[in-house]
Image (cartoon, rainbow, N blue to C red):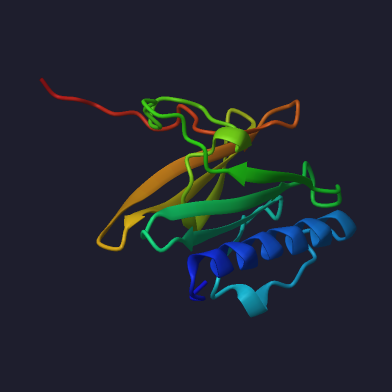
Length: 166
């Protein structure tokens, strides 16, 4: 995370991703004890024990922030989890407040809190996060994760409503 130069940080990040992919293929992501790295990455477990969310940030020498993450979700607590690798690839010009995204077009953030809820018999996970812009500026974000009946991950849901006064 703090290695210099930038190319070494990218190599370490790529190695970490490869290690995590290998671990998640051979073990249940819910069984992995990640206490030794929870100061380096964000490790969040939903209260219903069905979703686990790992996020971290890579900062380059130009102070550009690149978010990385993985979601592990299981339909019930005895099922093997589905693993979704998140790609911070928000299409330009889209309003993330009014769109639904998937793991390939994730509006990246470093999440620090998760809340599991049910609405109309569907499970939702509200997450609070931080979007780094540069070393002087960042933004807080609230988003909703859900997994549909086909097993697809979605970011965004019409659970929050805005009222604009004239």
